[in-house]
Image (cartoon, one colour):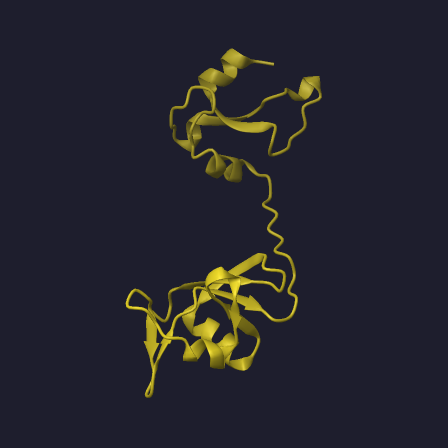
Length: 145
């Protein structure tokens, strides 16, 4: 239970990370974050620990009380916006398209797949995420340039 997931929001309630319950409680206790409850109410550690847990809630037991596990916490100070730019590569296109030909829909081993430009490079098509797809050799030959 202590290693289950808790969503971390920045000050403007934009999701930025997922952490463990253990780390979330540390952040609550030290005042780095607030617990987010129902209807987006926020609670510091003291007020959160005074909330009564329902039977369906996950709890952490202490010597003198049971504390409800927060599933969402929000940082008190502003933290960066997440920047997850994924590099365009052959392997990443195969992962995105799940090793299946985007024209016939069949799944192939990677050795039998190619990368196809939807708008061919000869006609000004760029090598971008939106213009490349995973394609089997037979469909690529049919499509041609």
